[in-house]
Length: 113
Length: 116
Image (cartoon, rainbow over all chains, first blue to last red; front, side):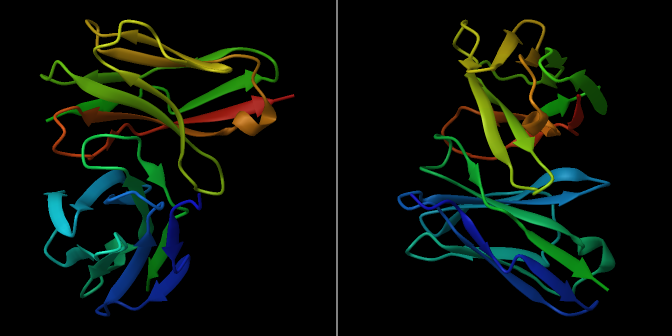
């Protein structure tokens, strides 16, 4: 099976802009979780989607949002970008919510200037 | 809230030797999962090993094994016969077992160097 894919791999945006990141889970996996990784805060959970519904949300401002489509692909959106949003954004998929290992994609490196 | 602590920011091991990475966690739950993930320079997070809290037997995966001490809330990773390809950041992670959430709580990581 193909692994988790994320697009784009690298992105440079300017403060105030918005960005959309995409994640395609492993075939058959219905749960997609998003994490933000920064040198200062480490790995932090953003949100999880299962069957097109947000199941859990981390402690991030409302500028961070996401959605999941019927084919389980997920997108996350960050509006009004700030310098502090520069990070590696990781997507992980699992068979279901709360069970099955999470398998990670290669990440999207977002740089905000 | 659950917390995961990795007190060793960096560790070094010689090739073919054994190294142990430490992890402690705090939770009020009785059932949960623990994981070790590896993140090489490519930044791809790779699952190394998993342990269910209800299982007393320590998990093993080839050269990787854990020492799970539930009462002490300790979950260390032992890497035997270390190889150059083991050099990476290693993250300990916790996940609840309630079936309602896939959220992983990560430690701050341990950078492992493997020397010749």
